[in-house]
Length: 449
Image (cartoon, rainbow, N blue to C red; front, side, top):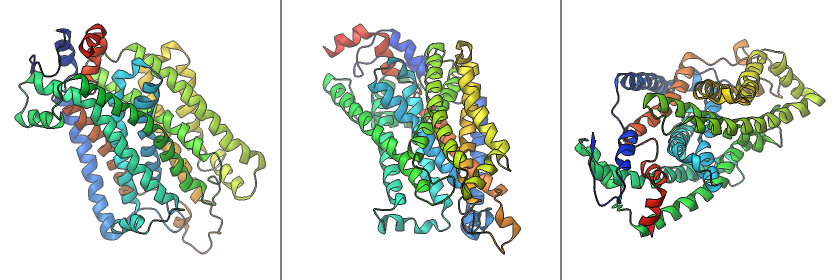
């Protein structure tokens, strides 16, 4: 793949050619092909079992009359959580004037889009009769949190797609005009998606204005999506869910896992595509500081979430907390708290802990811990219903996901990773034109003038 100069995308200095070569999408090597093959296999295996679920019903899962929700819903909450990284990086940091966020914006938006797509799909997977999904819309009730959840997820997906696509337009024009040696279909795709972009001042003004409006709009929607999701739990009279702080509790946890997901992706792109010049130690240091802040906020809500009911220890709440603190869920509960939150806070307090490799390890711990945290939010509560479990099979009193259930869940995770992988194959993971402009601020000012 070679680059060539053109007039239509703006007059950039020769340095732009070097940046373009560094950041342009590259074909998959052997490791990339193996990665795509593994993800595709996991996805297809899960899809096969989902076809079985459609044929034979939710009986192939471990969900029964008491455990009406399982790892599907835990996975849904996880996807919604990690999708909030788009608003964190692309909106909050942008509006706060953090210039260092530039190399992270597209990565975060790709993660956000893929996550929210599969959050919606997981809900359909969880339905025993997906053909009745339209009833949620056709017979919507305004007082139902499910109705609001559908609305806010659709809105968030739309804004996230626009926040991914609009800043991509100048890069598409740059690749359209300067890249040679790429397949003809890819060239046509860049031309079509660039929408006739020529880098004119009027186009720049409209685009930046649209990005600014979307950055403002996505923040309340981002808070709303996880607040409404928390209402699905908090409005249900169940031990562990009957809490008034579930909204901020969910939002703070979502920002934490989102930051962890971006850090993990930063390290993979940096090492696999040799982007050390663009994803520097400074970016890892700043993201480490941000992750510490978000983790401390989430730790506060965790303490508040468990301290108040633990102080009173009444009725079903006491049974629920005993199962978490000392019972069958205790090993998982304490592992999530220690390795998914306490250890990351301690390690990231030190400068050495905010180097790329330690940050990657910590990020994986945060993301994995966040998934199992959602498992602990959903499953133990359903194991302590207000109606006694009398005259039911022993297996109904416990929930242990089946292999088919795990496979379908793994397929959704693999599908989200596959979307991010394919997007980075077609489009630059780091904004090209914006990076060039920041490397040549004097030239940009002259162009606009």
